[in-house]
Amino acid sequence: MRYLALAAVLLAAAPAAPQSRYLVSWAMESKVFPGDGAGHDFIAVFDIGDPADFGHLVAMLPVETRSQMAHHTNSTMPSNHLLFANDFMADRSYVFDLNDPIKPRVSASFTDAGGYSHPHSFEYLPNGHVLATFQIKGADASGGLVELDSKGNVIRTSDATNVADPYVRPYSVLAIEALDRVVTTTSPMTPLTTREPSHSVQVWRLSDLKLLKTVMLPEPKPYEVARDYTDDATLLSDGKTVLVKTSRCGLFALSDLAGPNPNAQFIYDYGGRGCDGVPFAIGNYYVQPTKTEHSIVALDVRDPLHPIEAGRLYLGPAALPHWLSREPGTNRFVITGYGSIRTSIHFATIDVETGALTLAPYSIDFNRKWPDGWDGAAIPHGTVFY
Image 1 (cartoon, rainbow, N blue to C red):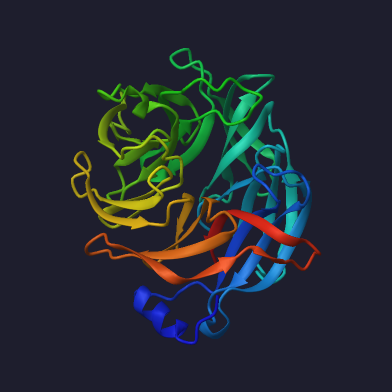
Image 2: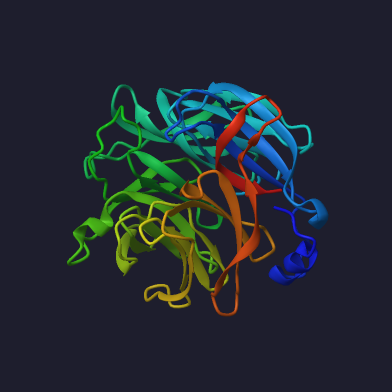
C-alpha cells in the first residue's frame, strides 16, 4: 500500500541509522497451504527505500521447483549477499546471488548433502561458508549439522544422533563465534519422519563441529508439554546468554554454554500451546511471535532468568505470525505467517526504551498478478532486509 505521508511515518518509526533500500522475500505461488505444486517458488525484491513508491516490486526470479513449502532463508542478509533458501518439503535448496538486488540470479542449487536430506535453517559464517541443519539421515534417522561453501558443496558434516533423545531432528542453528559454540534445536517437520516430541537442544564446538552434548530440557510443572519441540535458539545482547523457545510456548535459558556441562533452565511460559516462530533479540528485549494468541510479544530480559512481558502486538483473530526479521541498525522488523496474514508482509517497530510494539500502517500484498504470469495468491516466508 502507498501513502503520501509515508516518508514521515518511516522517519518516526526508525532511528537515525540508514534504512534498507530493499526487502527480499522467498515465497511460493499457491492457492492453498501447504503448497499444491500449482506454481513455482520464487525470490522477490521490493523497493522500500522510496516512500512515494513503497513496496514496488523491482525483481522477481522464479525457480524450477514447484511450490511445496518455500520455507527458511538466512535470518538476515549475509554480508556476501548470497542468500540460502529452501523448499523444505521438496527437499531442494537454492543460493541466490543478490549482489545486484535488481538482477538476482541463482548461483547454485542442491538437495541432499553428505547423506543428509531436508535442510531447514542456514547460518552464515565469517569465512563465507554456511552452517545448515539437515533433518534426516537415510530413511528416517536423526540428521546432522553440515558446513557448506557458497555453492552448497559439503565442507564437513557432523551427526546429530544421540541416545538421550531418539527423536532429534535438527531444526534451527545458532553459531556463536566468540564462544566457539553452535546451538541447534530439534523439531521433526517432514512427514517422512517420526513426529514424536523432541525435548532437547544440542551444543557443538564450532571449530570442528564436534557434538559436545545433547541437553534434555526439564519438565516445567504443571505444563510438561511446554518443553516439546525446541525450535529456535537466540543469543541475547550480552553475547553469552542463549534463550531456547519451544513450539509449545516454553522458554528456556542455557547455562555453562562454553563450559563442560551446558544445561537448560525453564524460565517462562507464554500460555497457549502454539509458539512455533522465528524470534529476535534487540537491546533488553526478546521478541517472539505466538500463533495461538495471534500476537507478537516482547519480553524484557534484563534479568534473563526472570523475563517480564513488556509489549504485545495483537494482529487479529485469524492471524498466525511465524517469521520475524529485524532491519539491521533500526527498531523495525517484518512479519510473515499464515492464516489471515499468509499472503502479505507486515512491518512493525519496537520501542527500545519500553518494549512497546507498534504495527506500521503499510504492508506488501502478495495477492496480485506477477511478472511470470502467475495471477493470484503467493505466500512469503523467509524475508530479510537488504
